[in-house]
Length: 73
Image 1 (spheres, rainbow, N blue to C red):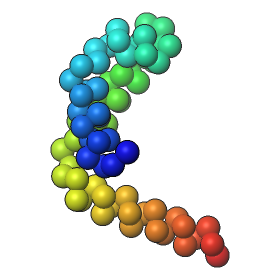
Image 2: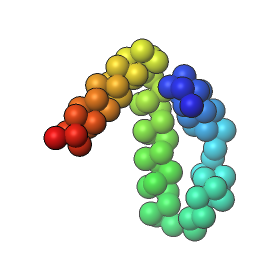
Image 3: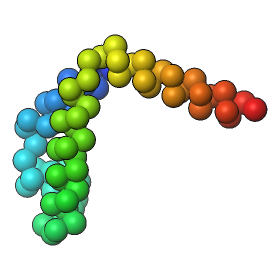
């Protein structure tokens, strides 16, 4: 999956998944905990889809390289 595919799917999920669909998809029951998780999903998705693909890829690639270098030491 490319970064663009990820952002497209995330954007679609952000707009199409309401709280009750979120419960169904995650297996959570209606509770304050579930509501907080749903709100966190919405907030996180909204933030990520505001990034352009190139910036997000640069951030991910830089961190991936640092993680790979640390693992090889």
